Image (cartoon, rainbow, N blue to C red; front, top):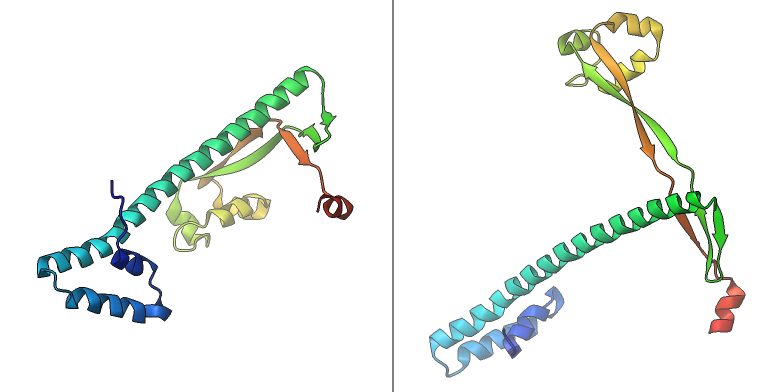
Length: 185
């Protein structure tokens, strides 16, 4: 593990387009030093390469944070669903708190999604339902009207899929009034 941060390394890592003069002076100082050329090359090279190491480290941390964020969102979603089930078990729809305004149970919802299955692309394209491929939105729209549906009958089928969202808890945070803000300050 590296424990020292050299001066040139610091200058290289902190350089901005507006202050390159400092970096130019540092390059000159390294090249004009009385050190062996291999040491100069290593010093410059390792200082610049240290940026790659830091970037890779940051990339790894970002991945870990993204995984943590996904895990936390999943945990919250599970807690809200399970909480709603338990509240329903006890017949509780809402409880109020001191720090939290209230916790309420949202209603379960069902959403219908239509799924289009194309049987004959060419005939639908000839009938005018295409962009560069079959325009599924236009076919679904035509399906809604009898006179348009007759033109393309037998070339597709529409399946309705029910998607259910279970009841969840909703945590309502207490709103802080201007008076409360002033009294805390």
